[in-house]
Structure formats: C-alpha cells, structure tokens
Image (cartoon, rainbow, N blue to C red):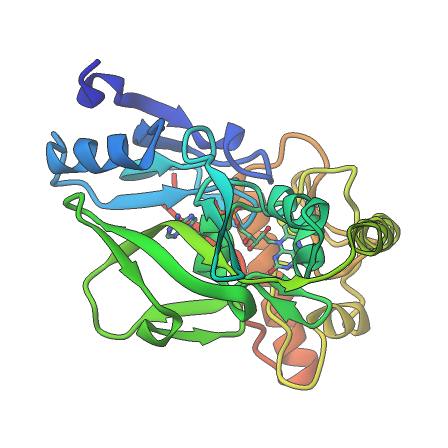
Length: 298
Ligand SMILES: Cc1cc2nc3c(=O)[nH]c(=O)nc-3n(C[C@H](O)[C@H](O)[C@H](O)COP(=O)(O)OP(=O)(O)OC[C@H]3O[C@@H](n4cnc5c(N)ncnc54)[C@H](O)[C@@H]3O)c2cc1C
C-alpha cells in the first residue's frame, strides 16, 4: 500500500500519552519500518505541517485544543532489536519504537550489564535518546555508540555522540538541521545474566514503593534543580494533594501529578503552573518542567 494512504486523521492523543488526557493530533502515521518511514517522508503529502515524533507518550501532554501537526508514532512499527558482534566488540541496536524496559531485559538476558536502569523507564528508545532519560546515576547517552536519524524529507543518517550537546534530560544537535531519532547502537559491558536480572527486579520493586504507578501519570513533572530535589521543594511548600479538576499532586511522590480519572490537559497544566508559582514564592526556585507540553489551548 502507498504509505500516504496510511495517514490517519484526528488521532486522539489521550490514548497515546501516559497521562491519558489531551486533545487530537491533526494527522498521524505509524510506519512499519525505517525504510517505509523514509519513503513516506520523501513523498509527504502534508509538508506544510510541522513534524512531531511520539514514542510511548510517557513524557508528553498535548493540550485540549489539539496539535496541528503530522505525528509519527514510532512504537508500533520501529521495533527492531538486535545484537551484533565484530572483532569481539558487541553492540546492541534498538529502533526508536523499542521500549526501554525491553532493551534492558534483552541486554540482561544476553549477559550484559549497564542497561538495568532503563527497566523502569516506561518510554521508547527514541524518547530516551531525545530526553537523555536516566535514573539511579545512569543516563541513556552514557551507553550510546551511534544513532540513526532521519530528516523531515526522509534522508537517513548516522551520527555519533559528539554531534550532540547532551545534558540532564536535554539533547540538542550541534547546528545540524532538525533530525529525529530512528534507532541507536548501545555498548554495554559484559556481565552476568542472573545478576542483571536480579538488579532489574530490585529497581522495579523500588519504583513500586516510591511512585504512584496505579494512576495515569507522566513520571517526574519537573527537573531537579542543581543540588536539590523538585519533590522536596514541592512537599515543603505543602502542595501534596493539591487538586485542579481530576489532576492531583501525588501524595506518594510530590513530583508526580496523577490523573485520578477524567482530568483534562488544562487541569494538569494549571496544576503545573500553580506548583511552579507556589514553590517560587516559598523557596525562590523556579522549577523547570521535564514533561513536554505541546498543542493549542481550547
Ligand atoms: C511512571 C513513569 C516513570 C518515569 N521515570 C523516569 C525516569 O526514571 N527517568 C527519566 O528520565 N524519565 C522517566 N519518565 C519519563 C519518560 O518515560 C522518559 O522521558 C522517556 O524517555 C520518554 O520516552 P517516550 O517514548 O515516552 O517519549 P514521548 O513522551 O513520546 O516524547 C517525549 C519527547 O521526546 C520526543 N521524541 C520521542 N521520540 C522521538 C524520536 N524518535 N526522535 C526525536 N524526538 C522524539 C517527543 O517529540 C517529545 O518531545 C517516567 C515516566 C513515567 C510515566
């Protein structure tokens, strides 16, 4: 089938984002392979619209008025995961849509260590590369050997870490035009399968204890300011339990906002703004958002 015929119209983003809230994307497309994506972009029938990539939507809020863009959904079709060995050098390749926990388990099962921290991050490889996702002292880019990217007109390229400025939860190209991640090669150390699997189990247990995982949420809403924790500042300001509509600052982890059922994107964004302003007033710290907010207000 001609990939242009697979263009979806009016895609409900509440089904594509972890907060289970938000508006509609004007167009969406879920490629079944990197090659199909390239061919789709080369013959894109809507080059007038901005292009926006979405992985597992675990760090994203689309405003209730929707997103006037062509959204590429990576998680269904960009799902290759593989290991290659050349001259005793082992590299793992994962396409953008592979879930980070899957890469963690895959590498552990192959007897490699390092990726265990990814097991509890419910995002995709593409999202992890775009955000430099991390926890427990490790970050995705600590393990990147090369990445494969694509331009909005479908040109596929390979790049190395020195082509990027990699910061805490932020990655930017060094002057190159806009490119999106379609996959990455990762280097992990040789380890012990059972040890890595046990570590994954332990880290997941820790998350269940510390995070409000039974309700839709987007993980940490704010970045930790230098030398401090956003959760500590929010808790100190007495904001746990603060509610706007069905959006609530979690009582379990103050840097999480949960959707207790039927929250709108506006409820969530209003709560984010309120937390920012109260924390600023109480402690002088302007919390910076970690979650990405896109789209139009109603
Ligand atoms: C319960 C929970 C726990 C979490 N814990 C952590 C944690 O410990 N550490 C942490 O860092 N994060 C954490 N997160 C946040 C989130 O999982 C990560 O930021 C993750 O990397 C986002 O990946 P995603 O595929 O969901 O990205 P999305 O939410 O789909 O997108 C996020 C941003 O990345 C961009 N993007 C996505 N794919 C691509 C691509 N292929 N190319 C270019 N840009 C792209 C999007 O355009 C968007 O701007 C947590 C979230 C939840 C819900």
